[in-house]
Figure 1 (cartoon, rainbow, N blue to C red):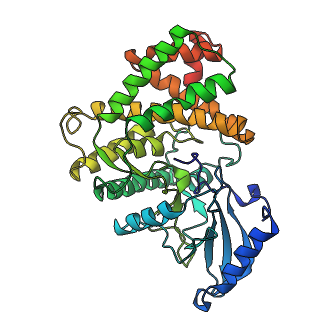
Figure 2 (figure 1 turned 45 degrees about the vertical axis):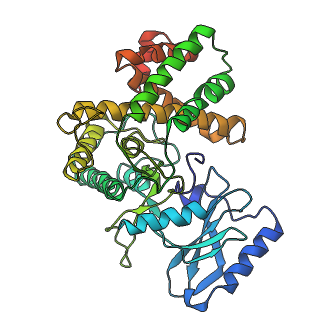
Figure 3 (figure 1 turned 180 degrees about the vertical axis):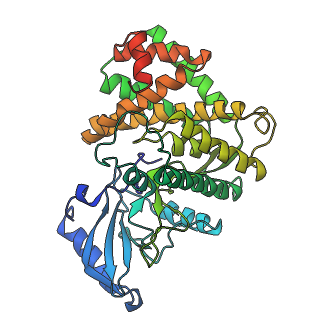
Length: 397
């Protein structure tokens, strides 16, 4: 799996740097390819400009067309990024009836792809605008929804996102996507001690601490492996869902889906955990639970959730919610490690600023279940916090 912000994490235009190229040859390859495309695309290559910022080696550019529309160019050097999964999974999503980009043209040899423009605003940007949140400096504390039209619109958008998730999961078949199995789950968890603890916090764990952490990791992995398996987007965040723009400027219609190239066949809880325990904005528990219950109800009706080896999920939302908590905990441990790696290995220091949000998520979840308390104690020791301070920090205070 690529680093968490692979391709759909659009930033506001003011945050994007002017278009630059690693070398003149790369620029020439792109421009020559654009000029070689059929006239029916109506491309205006001189309008090429950045569309998104990126944590991987893939980036997205936007350009205008002669009829006033826009298109997206994926720039993914083939020696650094394999674009074949993107093409294959985009078609899977489209076959499922979702609003995913159609590949209009692909220069496989040089790693350029022409795509439709699914929109200029992500679901998260839309929500932040409705709440008057500074997208470049989102608050650390949990956000609540106002009891007004803006709050109602945000709620509708997130419920719509859960409907997209259910529609994607209904298309699931084993053997189509790589299995999200025990080996990968374990290796992802190890990013936390290897990069967050050892590199970011510069802490060397004792033998007892290592043993305790390993026991918790085994518990988390076992529970996540016990959940039903479906197609998993793997980065189903509000920043990877696009607000569609109609010709009249309205933003009604199907949400666009991006950043899907790492999709797997794995735990049904994963994408809901991504959506509601976001990397960059935290929501009040009431809103998280409301949207999650709506998802649970829709998934039950669709036959995706039934009672079985994993528990009485179809009858007991609490059982299902515990499974979501465990999956979210796995993801937050993984992402804290990834952000530390981006900071210390890749020199992308801006990701370190988001680490406290993940530590807060981890503390809150670990504090909710007795069997996870050893993880809470370890985190508090690493962060140098006493129990009272840790309790306040878990709730953003």
